[in-house]
Image (cartoon, rainbow, N blue to C red; front, side):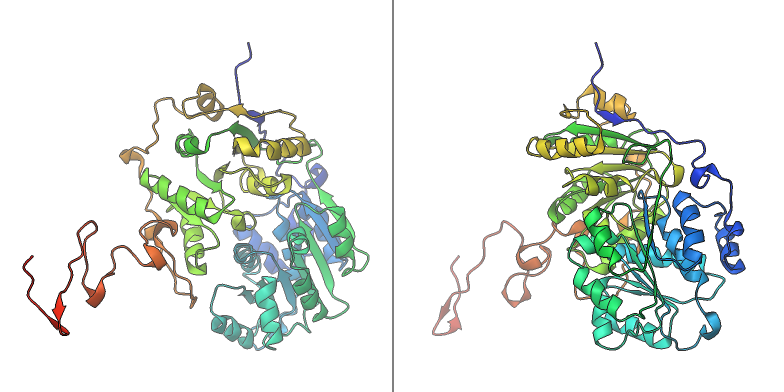
Length: 493
């Protein structure tokens, strides 16, 4: 009799994964890149391009428009970043100058990630990269633009706002990149993107990159491009839609038992940094709270947090102060963190595209990864559509609880673990160890995700709530002040 299992795909790391497209052994030094860029990459230990980079660089360096498509986690950022940096005119570095390159991304987190990658790759060029996105104060961004820069990376809304204020001048932006183009063109950012493109020169070099790009999006993208070359890179042996190195498991789970299952998955052997995805902000905050109560170093990341708190959570996660990030899909794009070994879909994704972007946070750059999905009874139909679209053909997910033996054998979980992390293993510093920066925003981060320790109207339960500033312990009766003729009288109570 076959043992029950929730595994739908077993991950395998290709031996030649570190080689470029078609297994041809080339290095970045073989391309017509500036020596400063090659040296900066070498300082980071980056010498060999991945398939999307190896295919893109010759075309992009010649100035041809590109539609680049590759799976999440395969190096798209350097695919457009290196040609962008290579084309910069650096004669005005250090002086007031309008941006020569524009990178438009759908989320704040992705803007931070892309800007950091460009800064690292262009460290020896002296190129200035300015981040423009909402949730932060206008003044520092305006000051940075007035001082001058070579590259601007940001989200459409804030960029368009600064463009309308005549602070952002794009007349010199001869290179334009739309990263995660399907997200922007497919989810309502098109008017803002069109307005930004209209402010750039007509003969610009345009590149679109994304993990998924439906036909309708490609047709729309062609309107803004001149005879684009469509480049699609993948391992020729990998016919699946998902990253080959990711082991994937799916379980039908009861809502009341998910935290119990999750707390045991987080004690699996070899687990490193982990991202837990939820569909709602409230669930993200609640799960982060419950995991923290159980001894795990967890941090929430969702739209109700101020930008300072979101960046604090990401910094703590990258530095290892917390090893569990509980996030909504706002973070599904742009999180590029080393050593993410596990991704957990606490709630079933809406469709296969969101599923791919979520699990693409692990198994990156040739490393192994594990993706676990919980499916509620009400979400079974949704999961079956995902299962069919991705070719798993695994049928209905196996019903699973924290006591199910196959959960432990599937995911290498020791059988003696409980739902609470032992005190001897609580070695992480925690979110509070990461400084919360003041970004001039109006939103405030609430304790541990925003749901706990708050009373009505957002006031802390520890704050004074009685008249006259006097505090009253919960559960004690409120003392009445008796008056006669407007004057207080002695009480016989």
